[in-house]
Image (cartoon, rainbow, N blue to C red; front, side):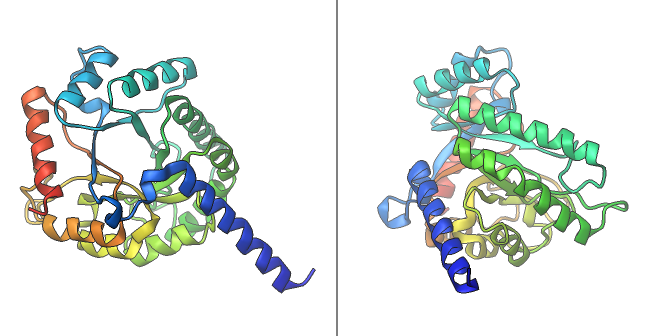
Length: 294
């Protein structure tokens, strides 16, 4: 078989997969011209812990939120019930914040990789049960024992082995930029995602995490359609602290403009401390101002 034939087959395969993702995820790929409004969500852990699941979702809805970011669950029946409660309240679980720090896909130890893989696979199945479209994954951790190049190569190789399950379940694995000494520029982040050549691997962009060494609006414009979901945080460079939204150094009007330019219209989820109804309504209003370009 000629290389040109192989190239054409690969192209057609990836084109078909991309079409499947677009169909399955709908609003995630909508353009600004088709509406443009961002969807407000909350992490489930930000809601009062004393409330039942149903009451948590009702409170989120009453505060103006449209979705929930869930947590990993091993009990798939419980995950399904939680997803049903969230959907009934009008705040469907749109993603799961899996993490991955405890057993990173960049580790040299095969036992750590096996542990991490099993956890991600369980979270993918929980996401399917909940009705979530995305699982957030910290792709690698660079430290004095794991070099940057090794983390890059190992994490890609190990995540690739999990992608067939993600495709089967129709759940995107979205790798996030965090303070893990990895993916330190938007160009590299885009390259890392592109090298998978798989539409079930995308980016989970955290606005606040890049402020210490960059400008979020630049990252958004470079990552573009690779972005599957967004975390909202603000950051103060001088004090190295995380203030409330619109109280730090993020240029929110430019960030909002950048999201509009790349056609991002899906969920934005603040990753902040939780609180009571008054606090959550204030947070909702802050996101409304961001949405309005303020």
